[in-house]
Length: 373
Image 1 (spheres, rainbow, N blue to C red):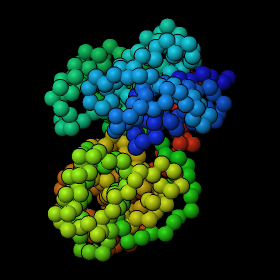
Image 2: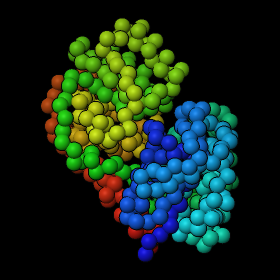
Image 3: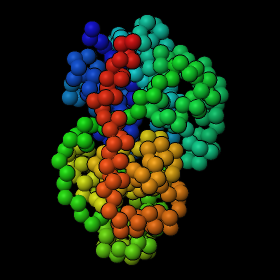
Image 4: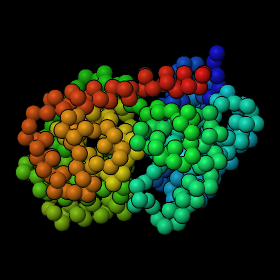
């Protein structure tokens, strides 16, 4: 039978946001199967001080946005969607992001409506809390200690997007039978689109943000043997961080070989951009499940990534890509030189094979089967 499905996401505006990318794909694909899908979110545009329209029809589904108050950091928000969600009367609620107020509200509403409710975690577990401020560390510890154990087992299922976070969820109090692994997916076009011409360049594709540690890539780039190769850095930028990177580029006299480009939201154009690079590099301090890395692997690119948990979950070093120690630009330079000197056809083939399971065609069926079970 056809269902009414509510999807809750802090953000719902086109941007390089992994949470919204997952929520949007779920909404699009569930609605194409004729289920009535409605997204509830804040009206903030991630990474800016701007707001989105309060209502939007997006492909086959509706988005309803609510005025939100920022309670800490960029993503910890309060937005009052309770009455509208009760009016919608969903058969199932998919709430995105662990440690968010809207997920505990979803539990209360699901109990009132007697509907199913699922939590998609998005792996917000930072080793040693290295990227968090002191107040954020206190808030995280409080939530994990006093709220997690009371709420996790009240969801019908807790959906882990990575395998590495499952032991963490258990430690927080989630019972094993409550946890299910359904990763983020990538559109099937990444496996089907005809290959475009490759150029003599290296590509970084993602948010130009401090967490991505792009200065490590710039320092490595200055050491490369090939002084003709170019570097393209593509994505939305944090203003102050971009200024810092441009200053470093000037200091190393690399202005002519490094190009910054605007984010690409069109899938066909994004695939062409990935195809145009010889090597794809992701130097992040941390990743939960790196979307852009999976996309590059699907296009049979030689990928090089820092050995954080999210990237190490995807790459077996020297088999389907290469790993280097987080922040070690000298090791990264050696890996890039090695990748440029050698024919890496087999590594590209293994890369593609290892990410075929992330096709949205497979994942959406897993989500539907879960809701129906």
